Structures are given as structure tokens and as C-alpha cells.
Image 1: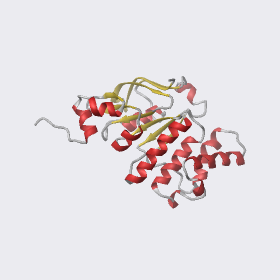
Image 2 (image 1 turned 90 degrees about the horizontal axis):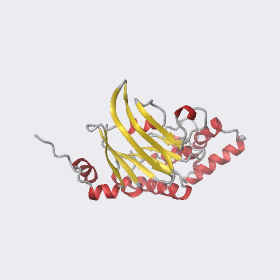
Image 3 (image 1 turned 180 degrees about the horizontal axis):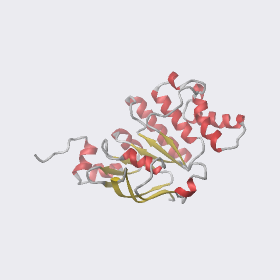
Image 4 (image 1 turned 45 degrees about the vertical axis):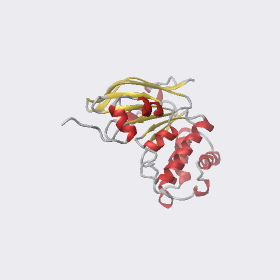
Length: 247
């Protein structure tokens, strides 16, 4: 299986202060890969660093062999679903999905609109193409954000807390969509999440971050970590148990 993402010797943080360091992992083509950990452990900071919104303090991130210097001169090698969906509220869902096509391709307007509509159809929203984000549900806004992330056929997608704020049924439907996209489109998906049901349902491989440890404390398949890890922090996470603190 070919690698589509390589992270090597990465240190991340703010204003020169290290939050996490010695971060290293690979993501394989077609995997659903998760970055796990408790609130405030650095998951979203790692995601922002991987997609270039924050510079690393040290180390490197490579997408299919393309490093940061080249990335600025080419269409994005990835699509992103932000936690809030980040849709433009005064634009229709179709216009939101059109945005990366207009920015990065020379497609005629009719062809670009057809591609955008096809992406909305993939996530079950083609009938709502001309609705504003405020006119659809939170789960539908997440789906529209996924359609926009898919617009350029990038080989890898990053999803920041995709199930956050959704009811259990809608979250399960989104999980099913994520698995379907990974299987049918052979797209690689990197999730940042701490939602246990989603982790167990959709994730192939994962790493777990810990703020106190300053880096990765576990890696592997979620079921394997849940069943076999002897690390008390990993056990507490997967069993939804409070950590036993020394008095």
C-alpha cells in the first residue's frame, strides 16, 4: 500500500513554545486514519500544521512526495472539512462547493457547476444545491463541507471533529458516508476526533496524543488499542473512565 502522507520528527506549538514533539507517522492510501486524544492535547494544532495553516517548529510534512515549498505553486493535495463546516453563509451550497473549482481550475462555468453538483450528489445533497447553509441542518452543512473538500479530487481529506455537535443518528450517518467515500473513491481520510463511536466504526489506524507526555503515546488499530493496551491513559480513553490520580 502506497503512502500518501509522511510526518517526520515534527514539533508543533505557539510562539516558539513546544506543545508536541517527535511526531512521526505515515498514512497509507485508502486508509481512514485518526488523530486521537483528549481536549486540549494538540489534535487540531497538529491538523493545522499538516495542512499548512501553522508552520512547524521543526520537522516536515510531505503529501505524496510534495513538500511545503512546492505545495504553494500547485492545487491543494488535500481537501479540508473544518469543525464548523466553514461555509459562506450568503452563498448557496452549490456556490460553496464551486469555490475551489473556480480558484484552481480553468473549467468553463457550466462544467464547473456540473462537477460541483456531482460532488453534492455524492453526499446526498444535490436536491439542496440552491439552499443557503442556514436553510439546512447541521449534518447537511457537514456533508456540504465534505462535498467542497472533494471538489478537486484530492487524494487525501482532513476532517476536524466531523461528528461534533451532531445527534447520534446524524453522526452515525456521517460515519457511514466517510466509510463509503474511503471505499468507493479510494480516498484517504485523516480524522481529528475524540468521538468513540465514530472511532470504532470508521477508523483503520490511529495515533493518540497526550499533552503531558508531549507527543504520541499510542498507535495502531483502535480495536487493538482498546483491547490490548496496558497504558492507563489509553485504557481510560477507550473505556470512558476517569484517570486515577495520585493524591
